[in-house]
Image (cartoon, rainbow, N blue to C red; front, side, top):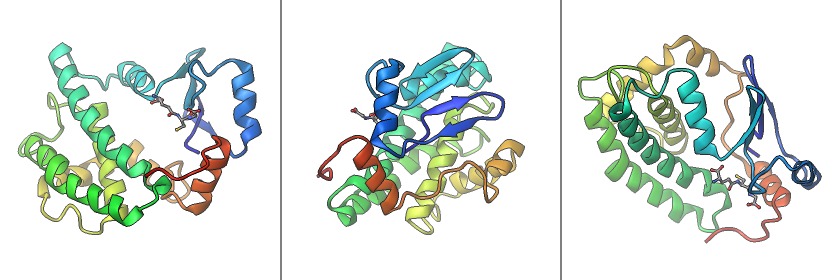
Length: 204
Ligand SMILES: N[C@@H](CCC(=O)N[C@@H](CS)C(=O)NCC(=O)O)C(=O)O
């Protein structure tokens, strides 16, 4: 499963690999809505992905200089998340080829054109400054390329942006072999998730 606990300094991850681990978390009472991810940071136990992301973005000054930047960052970020979620549910869908086709079409026709336009000139999406939306878009481009070789061929601004992002030292490090970046989900991953959460049939 995706990480459920992050302690600070760099970060440590604990993966759910058994149903018992998840039940232990439930009985510890840390999962407000009985769901992961759970992130431990600054003496708090945070749940809900977007709340977690916003906290980290604010803490590390990745959330724009003012309210107007922030709403743009959130709009881009939500768009990227919608696309990433389609990719993330792929391992659990019954008709994978159909889902792949939908993702590729939406990526090329709906999402990438938006980012291509936003990056025609500016080096970052909002306010000339690195934000959490840039980091999410960067990760999303990698996920897309893992699925569709050459998907960025008609999106030269996005491709150039991806290249610039890889030069940020923390990101360069994160891309090294053996780093904490997740590998592409495989069948074992899908089976583990289904067992941990008692999902007994694939999504449509
Ligand atoms: N809105 C939540 C959704 C979290 C969620 O769906 N978590 C799944 C695992 S990825 C889960 O814990 N499912 C167990 C369940 O709902 O019983 C978020 O964004 O963090």
